Structures are given as structure tokens and as C-alpha cells.
Image 1 (cartoon, rainbow, N blue to C red):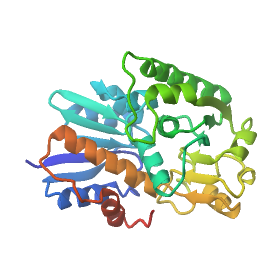
Image 2 (image 1 turned 135 degrees about the vertical axis):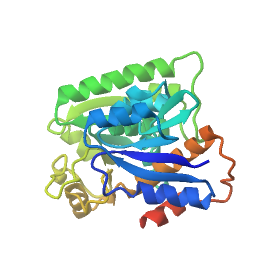
Image 3 (image 1 turned 180 degrees about the vertical axis):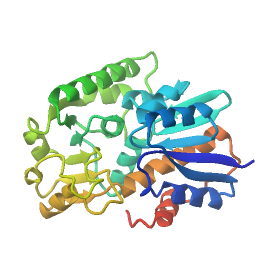
Image 4 (image 1 turned 45 degrees about the horizontal axis):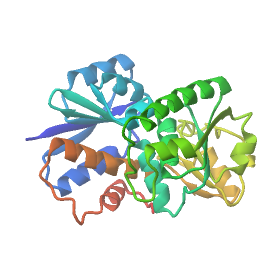
Length: 308
């Protein structure tokens, strides 16, 4: 049976998601069709989700919180991120996930970056930022600092996340690590120092971090500045910008000039898409064999990305 799958967001004309997902489903012989749903208002997005005329929806800016509210069941990844980037329909249920953090970490580990005992700064206070903060803690980070334009906003967002993480981490059964070298929920909670700040107050944290992540939308417009003063960066740091498809951002240019190891968001897009494909196939009960198929390489090639 033909199934409809979508990318929901605005603006998404630049997105490579349709070509990536359609390449996978064609390779697997599934009669599934993936297309964009570029909706300009939250009202339109809510109506689209409420209609449930789809098998799954990937969600990007600015509708991840709307997607979480639309779900009937919420995975820990979506609860902690305070927003969903994937909804999958299963009978009468609509299940929410967030694969952004997992995608970011998986890609960076693919490049050789180690999160073990690392200090990480994540720019932004939205669902993508929180998903990345959480995934870094699970992967072994010693310290995760959430920074934004307003210190009080950063504090409120981080405290809400940490409270929810505490409840999940100390539930009756500890959620085990999904990968051998990662931490369980309880270990990640107990061993990660979570901090917050603003770009103005966190200059020392930015300058000393092993990894700096931009999870804001700054860079999607040609004249966008970097989130912070790029002069804080130096050789030996890794800088990851979640923005892709808009040319080199001010952050990428500044980080490269400073001698940092620099990555744009293309690799994360592919890695989180791999996780999304696996989740949808599993929930849909699709009769396919993924053995021997390199989903990452297949999707990256379809998008025209040259990533690790």
C-alpha cells in the first residue's frame, strides 16, 4: 500500500530530505512517497498534523513543539528535547521522537570526535539544542553548557530539561545505553555537569570547550552573524554548525580561520535521517532487510553531500 510521508516546516525549500528519503524507500522497494509540507503558520501546521493523513512526518523549524503537542505517545528523546522532529502513526497512536541529538553525535563520532570527558557548548535554547545537549551527555561528555542570547531564558530551559532528565534517570528501571561506549540514562545524569549562560557571560566556556555547536537558525540568511564572537575560537577545537544548504555561515568561516575542525549540518541531517528511517520501518512493520545497506552513504549520495 502506498504511504505518504512528509517533511513539515517553514521555510524548507532548501531541504534535501525528500531526495534522501525517497532514495532509501526506492532502494528498499517500499511504495512510500516522501514530500515537503511547507506551511507558513502554526495554525496550518496544527491542522496538517491533526488530519493524520500520513505514515510519518519529519519536523523542522519552527514546528517541533507543535509536533510534540500533537502526539499521543512521547519517547524520552522528544520529552527531554521539548519538541519532536519525527511523528509516526501506529494505529490510533501518534508517536513522537527526536533524533536530532542522536544524529549530531553519530555524525561527529563518525568523523573521529570523542565525547569521552569532553566539554561541550551548545548554542540555542530550542528543541534541537536540548536534543544535542542530551545526546552529548549520553555519549560521555563531562560538561554541557547551554548558551543563548538571554541568560535567564537559558536557565529556565535547562532547568526544565534537567528536572525531566532526573525523573527519567531515577525511574525504577535505568534506561540502558543504546551503544556499547555510551552511558545509561542514570550514569549520564550523575556524571554530566549541566551549566547555562549567555553569549556575553559564557566567553570562557566557549573558548575552552572541546566542541562548540550552533543549534540556532543563525546562518540561514546571508547576512546572519555568528551566535557569538568568533575570535573566542582557536585551533584544536571542533565546531559544528547545524545549518546547511545556505553557503558558508559566519560561524563556519570564523572557525575555519581560527584553525578549528569545522563541520556544517549536512552530516547531522543524514545521520538523524538514518535513525528516522529505522524507526519508521520498525513501527510500520515493513518487511524489508536492511542488512548490508549503508543507509548513511546512500542518503548522503542522494543529497549530493560529501561527508565523512
